[in-house]
Image (cartoon, rainbow, N blue to C red):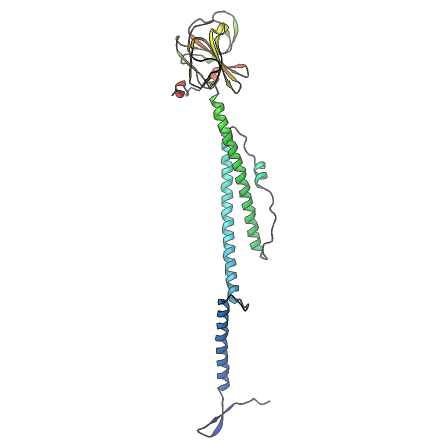
Length: 309
């Protein structure tokens, strides 16, 4: 089959001649014009929101955007992991504070119960890597949220116990009520200096001259003041928390029954009343009605003067 040839008429020569390059030029011109038209169409389409649904550039933009979002998800997952580790450190510190506040530690089983559990896996997208990142992010965030709640409750408990302890410690007979000499071995069975028989001495004797100031060893309510057998002039303070103290052989008292006193308040002066062989203070500490050795409650670095204004 013969090829079709193109000819053009030459007015100068008044004859037809074969057009050898005209077809090629027409094809090239058509390709260039078509390319320019197509590119212009794409640009106009993108400018008006991809009305023709071509979306070549938009697809590339979405790929780049997804890559950025995936990197950001990975970044926040790592940040949450760091936060979780810091929360674990806070939990360890919280346990130290619980021990200082006389509370039991939160054991590992309780902490795991408070922060554990399995999160439901959700299929967010068709990408397994993105799904994994999103689900790990949800799990870590949920664990951090539960850990924060657990620690918040724990710290509230510590604060309450600390306030309770401050009140309880203020009612603990923790100071020597009078300056003077004493022996920690004075408590218990001994030969009575006047009766000359062995009997239990349920307190200690602090020796000093008559008129030496006596101070309340802890906060409490004066429960008794007056003469009491061999104790002579005496007074008794109920400190609550099952503690009571008794002060005997006094020469003078400055408080009355029902009066509230604080640690370090002046309550009496020493004397030689009752069954006594010399000026001194007989001092007792009772816990649940049982006599204790008062020296076990003396803090040598704490004095009554420390509590006086």
